[in-house]
Length: 285
Image 1 (cartoon, helix red, strand yellow):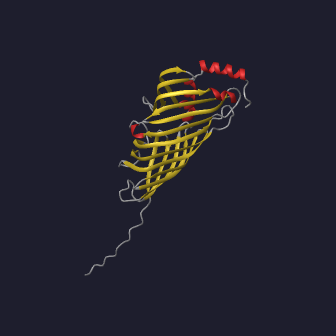
Image 2 (cartoon, one colour):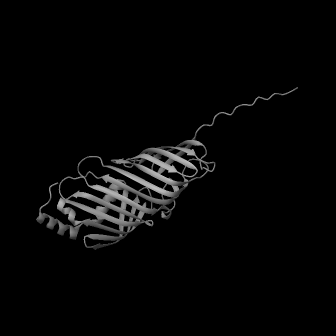
Image 3 (spheres, helix red, strand yellow):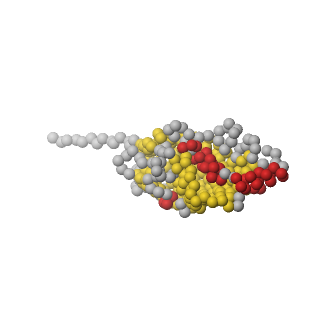
């Protein structure tokens, strides 16, 4: 896009300084990033500053989690970069505290006029998952570990193209407590590293790599999450292998996750054991 004239920049700068819709911009960004109109975003303790807004608390919810937030942020600062106007774009930056760690969120190259392809990025830093409330997610009762990761996504505003992006998440020294498997016994999986890497295409989340490496077990797999579907479907296939006799799952086998994201069917299928060799017995008369 051609650069704007100096007079236009001054006019836009004044308008943005007094009327920039911080809350609406951040709400739309979270909704686009996390699942469209099924997400709810509310702000507490909002006050305006110089070219920025402050919020003491941000609550992000989902219609399938009744009465409880999906996650919460504290001490959030939302600002825009006036120097980006010289390129005819707006850059929005947000920083917040999240469960003992930090979340940095930015959208660059938002066109002032016309069509453009803004770039969204989200950086997670040292988030302590042990501080996340128990029972909030249907996949497991609770989780422990330190999370770091990043998400980069092209928003493709008004272009008609499907939004594309990449993501990478690493959780170290953690535990998945009471995984919701369809077995009589509870399943708890301690691990050294949990890695999730993949891509986004429109409303689809493509998981190219999901690996859990622990002292007693190794789990690997991939799959697809359709976050924009009416039922928000999930389809993952993982293989596991016990490394020691203390492994939560003995031997080898397959774990499948299917159905609705918020009511998943998690099934463990051990590999069939070799048939036992019969022993001939001779009876003396």
